[in-house]
Length: 141
Image (cartoon, rainbow, N blue to C red; front, top):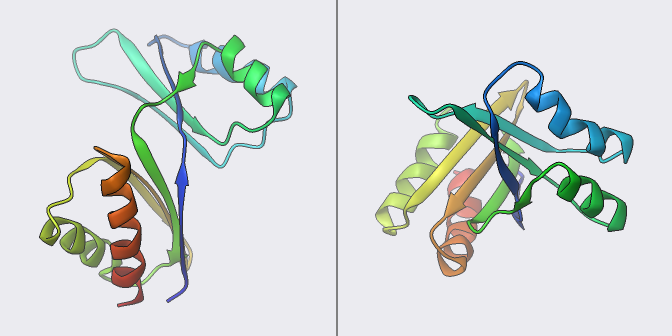
């Protein structure tokens, strides 16, 4: 099973949880023609604000656009994982990380057709480095 694992920096910010706010945050990025690979938005239960996270932000135009949007580099070390989707791959990855006592701060995964994509955040750079090797091994089956 082919899998790629890459350390990434998510850009993150809190926004008001009301119609149109997400579009306003994304407008400077669209104008700068930033090609996003990851976009997450969610409101935590009971909160009036939502969180937006995105990747990648590279180059001067993209950096300026994301700063105009009010987002900043997230402190959590994150991994972007892409691979062939097979039954049980999520379980194998979760089991490998758990057996290595690596805590996953957040995880977002999606399968489209025969491929899956996952973003996971970790407590430290060391945990992300260890997780990278374990994810590659677990994804191979």
